[in-house]
Length: 513
Image (cartoon, rainbow, N blue to C red):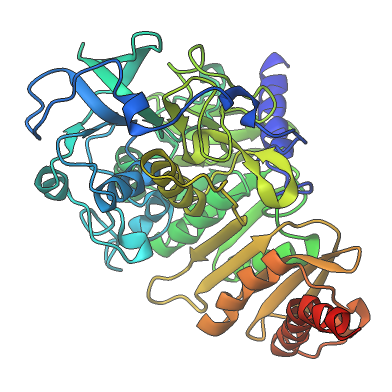
């Protein structure tokens, strides 16, 4: 019973914490401005250089580095590009990563990387940053050419904020002027005592995880995916492409409950079932069972039933990777992650945090949030570096954005690509029936708060962030009567134009008096 309680608490807490009923981020409490602790701190290049001597060339003749980024994901790659754009990389920037690879576009790991081997799966160096946003591919050679020092497979194990030093796993001692923490998240795991570390049980967070999973997929027959969120949906779409018997298990009543409404989830569940995926909703897992060889053989549920499996993929969320920085910088006890202000400055002068690990002010909705998404990883890294190196004091103004792309390999009946912008609060109005589009609009107090679109045109997708940011007033009855997604978007666009013109018309009226 103790094991059951552990799994219940683990999955329930992850499910509830990932709810965005009150916002897109994982946790979103109200919070005042964070500017209070920086009132006496001058953030300039001279400030960051004051306590150490910087090597004058890219050879890094001593242990001193003017700028150090810790992390090897999207945020690190985009931060590096921004340093180069500002002319402050060559001989000044060092990146410390626990991975064996240069920074890459991590979303590929649960999408194109898992395609069946005969469907042209994604592989490095094809998705190094910053190709995800149309930028130059930043291979290991690229970093060398730009004079950026890279430490691979050597994670930071300790920090001394007073001395401004980092210690790595290999024993290197690095002195920094400015430190950007971009360590991202680690996958939430099942406890070992209920089978979380059995052979054949996989988690996916980096290339090594993905390679291990692909190796197992080639020998598997029955796959169980635990979790009905992004990871679960994307992995399940891939495993059926391998012609594997795939079952998805999750404790909630429908897929992706932190975003999808029940009716929207039903449409996607039907699509997945058409592609051969089976669902067990509202299920609680008791433990994973193993055979004589130590490989997983089944998933045992709390109700006593057993599902055979020779491969289990667990996608139940992630936790911010704050160690070993948690005692040196201020953490947000509610959202997890490192507390920062609108310029990504932590409570400790000279230390910044970006991407998944940052608990930042979500300006649009006046709350503190932590967002696990590639778009935020890119944007926060770029904003942080520009604020650090220039006179920019404009606070980060992020519009929450999520998307997914599945079933994109050859031979599927329908390729899926949806995008969501804004906040999913208020009443949800669904238009369309996968014929071939579907959209959901969230209205609160007559204003559009969020919008999701599946199978839209490029022009329609470009409209979504404009709608979500402007939050136009929309006639709910008129929107509900729309005969198609196109008509609903036209109604929203007309409301957007009225909202945009209204201040101008009021001004004209005033000056005419």
